[in-house]
Image 1: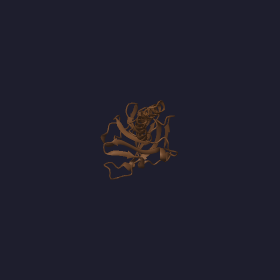
Image 2: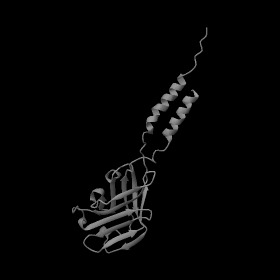
Image 3: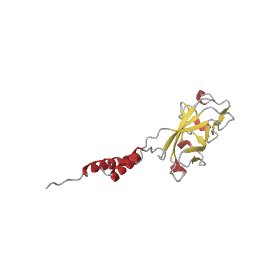
Image 4: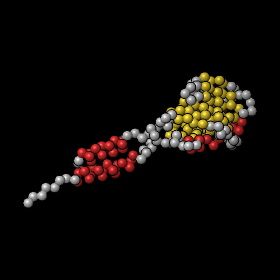
Amino acid sequence: MTTKTTAFAAVALAAWLAPTTGNASPINYTITISGGVHTCGTFRPLNVPCDAVITGSILVDSEGATLAEQLLAFSLEAAPQVTYLLSDSLNPAMSVTFDESGGLTGFVLPLFRRLDSSQPLVLAQYALRLTANAQGGSFAYEGAFSDTWNRCTGCVSISATAVSEPGASWLLIPAVALTLVMGRRRRQVRISI
């Protein structure tokens, strides 16, 4: 193999092996609500303790131009029988923020209300408010028609889940293979007379 062919093969192989998760989009993040400072009212959604650990997820794409292209999905299980989804949002003033590399740094989800009365609890009466930021964000699960509520501040964290999106680097496999094959075929031929 020539030096030029070897160098090309090495660069192509390095590009193929390089991690692509830094710029992979969309990315799913786990939302965890725990710790922080809790203020507990009398409302306990379906017997869930005020300081219970609550989890959910948010799917975002930092390359989107509009909020609808950036905020793709949201799910939060406030109680085992009650999961709020992005379609339950009633406030268009939602926002997501990203760092320079496209990582999610925070969000504001000001109002979710379940209107599905087929659930065990008449959820049209209860509102969910959620923010995440560098200070830990806040969570509020409150009655819309009463003063009973559960809240916490400094209690919301987000972490990226494993990203398995390979990007377009898999396309380099045939290029590397072809380079190696062609490099071996180019041999000088000696002609004897």
